[in-house]
Amino acid sequence: MYKGQSGMWSWLLHRITGLGLLLFLFIHIVDISLLGFGPQVYNDGIVLFDHIVVRLLSLGLVGAVFFHAFNGVRIILIDFWNKGTRYQGRMFAIVLVLTIIAFIPTAYIVLKPQLGLALSWFFSPQAILNVKR
Amino acid sequence: MLGLSRLYSGSRSGAGGFETFSWYYFRISGVLLIFLVIIHLVIMHVTNDVSCTTYAFVAARYANPFWRLFDWLLLTIGLTHGMNGLRVVIDDYARTARARVILLGLTATLLLAFFMLGTITLIAFQPVAASYQGPACIHS
Image (cartoon, rainbow over all chains, first blue to last red; front, top):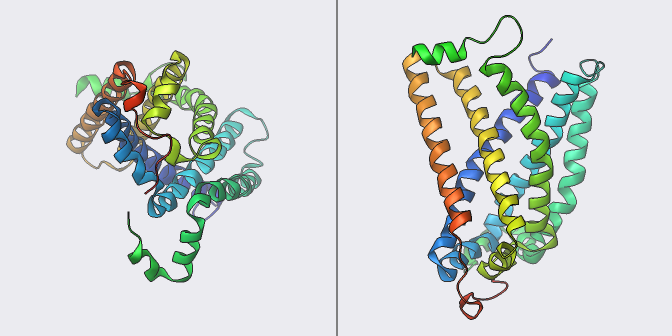
């Protein structure tokens, strides 16, 4: 009943995205702490986030945030809404649809400044080797 | 060990105990984080490009104490919610009592270290003069 069904996948995805977000939070606390070393050091850190590879990685962050947030609402509804358990499977489908709907425009905006580069990389992966910082 | 097991024993009467607190805390902090994280994400990646979140950007933003408080709440609620999640994961997979105590100790240490680093960064930030803050946006 449980294994291989929506309940298992939502649980697993919630756990993986949660651990991923925590790992990002560690990195983020450290990169923000560069503020204490002055503008030069901090901006040298920030410039990394402009890089196409880091922008692509941050799409994973965006997707994880949306999924974890929407699935968290689903968990709360299962706990507190008297029909929550009955609709948990359908709510999981809604969570996935909402994640995709929120992800697409955000991903476009995040990639837009480097979109030309992203597309050229997509169609000819060796182009990444020519990327200079 | 005795203290930990007592803390973890839960309550069969259905109310109270650390696990009950943890259960509620996940849900309350989760609802708060939906708002805090999504506002933060939109400001840093949608209404501004990340390449423009430079030192000068932070200096202008942190001139208003509201944003320092906002970021401190994000730090505190996000870190405690996430570390509590890590605690649950450790409880699920640690096979021996010894491994569990070591991993939970590490979790508590990381929580304290990252909380202090973040809090100190937020409180201690004093922008240098505007003329030294560098560009508004930077590109690689």
